[in-house]
Image (cartoon, rainbow, N blue to C red; front, side, top):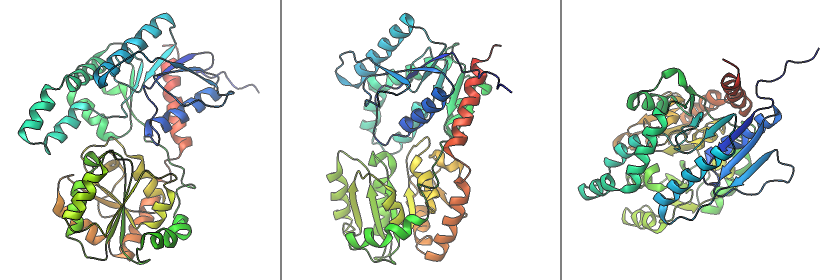
Length: 388
């Protein structure tokens, strides 16, 4: 018996992502989406300023649009203009953007809502910083682009990577709730697995001079201010001397945070490792993930940690809060609540409690497979591509 043709067969899809970011969640999402769609027979063109070259047999055509630009405002504006011109010359059945570019059919809100990020950021700024942010041409441009995107009549669907982001869009924009689709990222629970502790715990700790039984918290992320490293350093000052913290991730101003750790007299217990690949050994070495992020639509590191059997301490301003049951598989607090952060880290310094919550964390994410995510995306594409 012949299977019915897929709704995606014979259609052309334009995917828009300005730049490739190593380790980026949007890139992983795109790769899975492109693979799933190519297997369905869809012709895919990726529009980008820069993208690493894939194998010659790749089913995706990459078209580089790299108009000259100085500064991030000109960079974003010129790329948006080049994309719109390209789509006018070469129309596609469906246009999916991962950038705030009006005129697309489908938008993935992987960066969340910019005005919400600015509101959260204001809480840590002094009056001069707030004024400069308010007057910033770049932020004004992004706010205008965001409003134009969500009010554009051509927009048919928005992929939200968390319920938090969906609710923020509904709160700030007059958009049909039926256009908003929550699709959580998928996680390979065999790659990220509790056996990582057996493989890496002792060797990583020994290399850093950390006792095998010492409570060890892990932070993974780039952009330390937004992700909460300053409050983590202050919290470490109030924790017992046996507690250690690994900080993994890219940060241009790393010396600033090392100096803070020295001032707080915790520099011997905080290990700044920079960007590391692969990151799996550090999940294996740690007891819990701690991510007091000021704003994060959905951190993939939370999924990776939970699949690896680690409980997660994060903030209500993180989309990972969708998955955290406070006191069951992790803990939640306001991003700036140092008292709560210290209390949670003290609690998870108990190895038995930490292990029990880690088991619950893994159970929470086992169903969030890449295959499930790809299936949800394909179902949405079929819905959009089917005749009315």
